[in-house]
Image 1 (tube, rainbow, N blue to C red):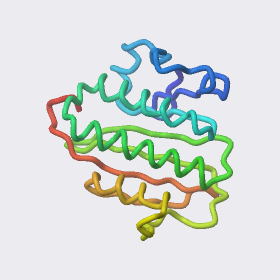
Image 2 (tube, helix red, strand yellow):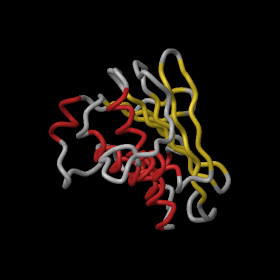
Image 3 (cartoon, one colour):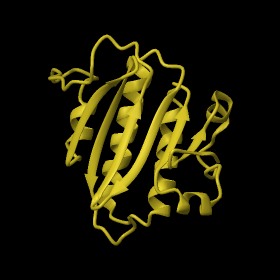
Image 4 (cartoon, rainbow, N blue to C red):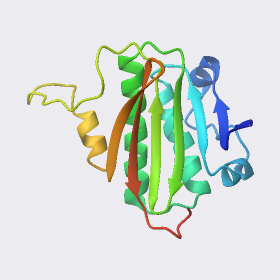
Length: 168
């Protein structure tokens, strides 16, 4: 897979997303994941891409030997929520997810190409509301999080604590 400016990159097509099954292995050899300290993968804005994203995040965590269940769960939840929000609220043709670690932090960033009427914000949904809780749940597991405007789009990021020495 190509590496650009220190990032190992993977691009998945709509066809790959649609034909992906839960039993599918990650489409890269394990040595690629082990050598990829910083990874970026691009996906089309399809809801079926969310479980694929989780599978790719798991592969990266496994390669980094991050075994802490809390950290793994938090990063998977955050990546899923950020990707789902980008799919739901942007008009992107591609959404990019980036993963990296630094010290005792795991980072995830999801960037879209824009089109959303607003920036990410916490909502106060009513008791019977079916939507509006995801961002608060996801970022509640993060040490810190934020967003920034990028070339017409938006990038949302979060940092999750983990125990160094378990793969950094």
